[in-house]
Every structure is written in C-alpha cells, then in structure tokens.
Length: 599
Image (cartoon, rainbow, N blue to C red; front, top):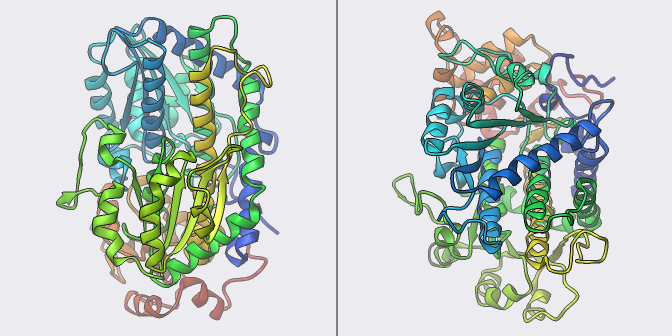
C-alpha cells in the first residue's frame, strides 16, 4: 500500500503516487505520467484550493491591480520579482519580456530600465548555472532588496518560493512588512501556509513559517498558493512549481497591461487561464514525438554523450533555464546538458552583462557553440534545435547542417504555423520534429483581444509558446535522466547536496528508500558527505551550512548514503560498489527494492 508521507510533510516534498514506478517505465510511459502530473496544475490536487478557486482568482485580480498602479505611475515605483534557482530565472524572464511590452506601450518614457526588476539568490550567475547556497541567506536577501529599491516610493515585491521555504525570500518578505508605506509584499508558493518550513534559519530568530504566518495578517499582503500536488520527481519544483509560477504571474501581468492600455477591454482571468490549459493539452498530444526525443536524449547520457540545446527566438531563454537545473536535480555535470542561444549575453541583457564561470567567460551564445563545442560533437550527442518562429529556420540552417555532419541526433522544436516556412525543407533532416503550441491564441477569435492590441497578442503568444517549450524540455531532460538511472521510485537519487533544503531532502530520501529512521538516515548522510565510517561529535554539532559546504564538493552523496543506511556497506566498499553498479541495481540484488515499495 502506498503512503505519500506524514501529514506534516510539505506537499511539495511528498512523493507522487502517480510516478512511484517511473524508473521502471519506457519513454512513452514516462511522458504519459508527466502529462498526468502537469494536469494537476489545472484540475487541482485532492481537496485543496486550486488555480480556479475563488480565493486564488481574487488574489490574482488583486495582484493585477497592484501592478497596474505601478504601470500608471512608473517613475517612483516598480515591481520586483525575486526567487532562488528556477523561481529567480522565471522572474528574470518576466522582467525582460514585460519591460519590453511596457516600452512598446509607451509606459517607460520617464525611465530607462522599465517598471520591472528582478532579484535572484546568487546574482546573475545563478541565471545560467547552479548556485544554490545563497538561497540560505536571509540577510543577503534583505541587502539585495534594499539596494535595488532604495530610491523607490512604491514597490510591489513578489517573492517566489515553491515550497515556502527559502530563507532568502523570508528575509525580504520580513523587510517589506516592516516598511508598509513603501512595499506591497506578495508571496507565491504551493504549500498551505501551515506547512511552510518551520526548521530554524541560521543566524536568525525566525522561521519561514513565522514570516508567512505574519504575512496572513498584514493588511496589504497578497498570498498566492494554489495547491498543485507533489512533483513528478519528488521535490523537483522546477517542473509543476515553475510552470504554475509562470502561469500565475503572466496572467496577472497581462491583465494589468490590458487595463492600463485598453480600459474596459480586459479579458477575464479565467479566459487567460483557459489558454494555458489548452497549451497543456496540445503540447502533450505529441506523446509519440516527445517519447522519441526523450529516448534519444537518454541514450546520449548513457553513452557519456551530451544534450545540447540551440535556441533561436524570444522563448529560447527557457532552454538555458532547463539546462542549468539538471546539475542540482540530477547531480549532472555542467557539460551533460548545455544550452546556447542566439546573441548570448547581448540578447539577454542581464544586469551584470557578460559573466565568468570557473575562471573564464561563460559561453552561452550560438557563435561560441560553433567555435568551441561543435568540433567535439559526436554521434553520441543529441542536439535539440529550438526555433520559436519559422523565420529562424533559415538562419539556423547552416549551423544545424554542420551538426548533422557530425553524426549527432538532431531534434527540431519549432513553432506551430499555418504559413510557409523558409526552412521547411531542412526540417526533414530532423530525427524527431516537435511543435511548440500557443493554445490557439487568436485575436478577435474568442473575445480575448481587441482589434488594436497586436502588441499584447504577440506577448501573450510568446508566453504561451514558452510554457509549451518548458513542458517539452522538462519532459526530455527529466525523462533522459530517468532512463539514465538518476531517479529511483520517484526520488532524485543523485541530487546535489548544495543548500539547506537539499540537505534535509537528501536525508528524507535515504529514510524513505531504506526504511530507516530520520536519525539513522542523517547519520548515513553525514558519513557519505565526510567519507567517514564514524562521525565525530564535533562534526555533528556544526551548522548545516558546514555540511552543505562539504557535501557540495562530493559526488554520489545520496547513493552512498543509501548503501550505508542498509548496514551492509562501509564508506570504502560503498564507493567501490557504486563505481560498478547503480544504487538501484545494488538494492535489487540485496532484495531491498520491491514492486510494492512503501514510503
């Protein structure tokens, strides 16, 4: 019998009974399971409030009005999106797209930067790589917000933390509530407030729950926390959490721009949401194509090859997001899944511009791919070309033909179009061809747009296509790592222990897989981190941040901890075994992995 977990476990950290055997599935079954999990975004989960509940819709309307007030008086006010990891990357993408829209609509004529700002724990480098530890600093969160908003008289602050857990966001929310004349605090996450994180935050007297609970009684605060259920891969909030964040915020922002630019013609919130639901349906109708792409990508990883995303067009940033997430989620190497986009940093226009990574320039442009990566591309690699408009296919033609000559598998993800395409002939060279969908968003076709709102239609179409692309890439990269043995019973069996949240998640995984107590699991985890069969008392007493610092430097921490928790291995024998076999194979041989596995 399946048990999702104790009642006090945050819903975002529960294992999903739908995907408990996903590691036993073939590629087609994996896509079907992901489709079913993503459907929870719209259908809701069990008896909890959903996206379509009255309270959620009311909060969305309220947020739209607060943003509208900023748009109508942008000189001394702004909207700030703040998050860690995926949440921060989505915030950056939103600020870029909607600042461009504001400029098109003439709303930023008195300021150069636009009405939207972003913050991400770890700074701009975290937009493109895994930088997890800064999420744990509540103090740095406050410093970053204070520096960004110090000259503003009115700020709508939107803190995004899917699990209601990030200290970086907790510090900022607390900062906002202490300054009610300036800040409107908004919290977005996907747990009930009562399940917000209650564990101590280092060097602070408050927990996230303390801050969230205070927010409930704050007179101007907005809380958006529809429950969309456990993730397909336990705790992997890059998936449903990231998608729902995008849907919620884009719905509110589109409404705000509509009301400011076309008073009296704003579509209803439910009308906008219905388009996102259609995108889900149309995207996942391509199960055969998605399954084939997933299989090719999984085979590349199994052959020690690579997955490369090459992006053209305004939605291609989501490829950089997906690639960056694979490192902490699956303990993938930086080069296992890489993304490159047309124009690189010049196109993205992030605040800090060109960035360095490990002592040299971070390479993210297609030009850099052609010069530094293409020469080593082989038949073991899978290259995924993303063209969000048919007009980019001709531009992509030369580079993709060079890729094809290298023998790499070539997957094309292109925008659905009814018109002619300059690159249509080349599409025949793709091993797999998949379409990005926009939910059939048409001006004047369903009352969503008025005649003079082409600019809004274009932005809405981009939002919808980007979500379609996100679902496609999430499915491919997740499924590929499942096939590569990086998931066991729905758990990220090889996640990187790179911050406080992931440290405790790792201990939970060890406990749930082996059936040992939380204390025994923690002991096994510390042994795996420090590579010691006996953990001295002085190590046990140090702050969690010290364990994280050490754990981030080690490979195979969770698989080793699982073996140690069985009591049949020491550190040396466990590491030797993992050089030869996957942890799932070892557990099966020991008779510790059953079809009716309970958690």
